[in-house]
Length: 428
Image (cartoon, rainbow, N blue to C red; front, side):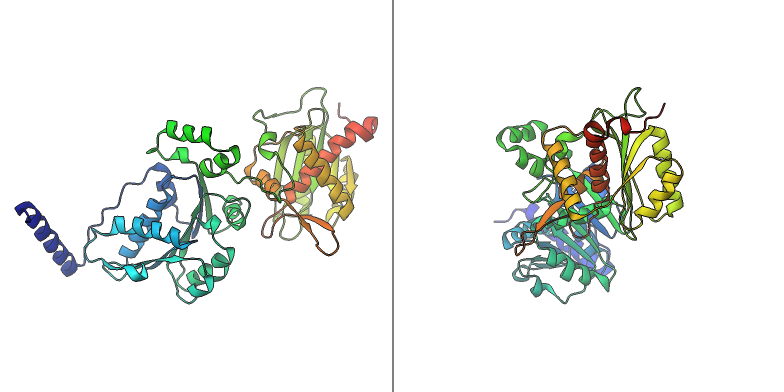
């Protein structure tokens, strides 16, 4: 038998719902976001890519964003998950925060919730992308995106957002160097409309550090890096292994007396970057890395020569292909010690294999540049199954400018130590 208190609460709730429906004003109480979640929620970029560790709090964040948008107007929102099991978890989270909102209508068989004012949130599985074509959307959460299909994002969800100028939240733990990794890079590179975030499980203040540390003792190194630290771990197709181990914590700000410095230079083409990498030849480690685009070659040459002067560079190994040769000749006229490298496939293969060996043997030191180091991790070989011909390239949508600059610099290091010897130019 219901108590008076229970009856009173139900009556008050009914009155509140009637008042809300009459006035059109609803009180929405969502859970408080922790500091890192707020950084994501407050960012206004059209596409936000969040790479995060397990239990960071992504489901709660996704639910809050969907509900808040649906309550603000007639917004059509989708919460997309890779599998049916993933959708069930998403649905339960959404229901947890929606059930007390006055005026909510729940259609469990459709996994659809409508909110006062006409907004709606639908939970869908991405198992068959073709079944999801057609609807125009205001907002999409692609949950565990790294484990979903690229086709779903490129051919279905992005077009669905176009006519309503919608936005998207791609949120996932990493899964190797797949398409989610490439989308994450777009935010790091500052592409218009994109913002990328990286958070670990440790960034959730509601989880005890000791509990996370305990996971480290029971998980493999690779699994801990990927699942807890949210790192894009090198996979079987990666050419360069040991990138993380090669990163140096000590940074050299100026030339050391008695040391020789060399530079690798990769000229940018129309949509690429020009990249330079300066190395301490004796120590076999990188001291400077720079990349730039959309500036004239006169300005580029000036920038390169400034780096040559700063580090008293003894030799510049520069790619000759495309715009390289005329710029190399100009730099030589200015007295810069440039050696042109014509990049044939056999020459590139040699550069790749030498640099990969140096990394594997722990003989290479790299700067902690996330963009450049991610380019190394993603660099892959492609084998023609008919001919057996091997081709080395960055994945589609990514760049390899810093990769080539680093390989050329390392070639200069090894050339200086093994072949060039005293013929290298030295500054006083």
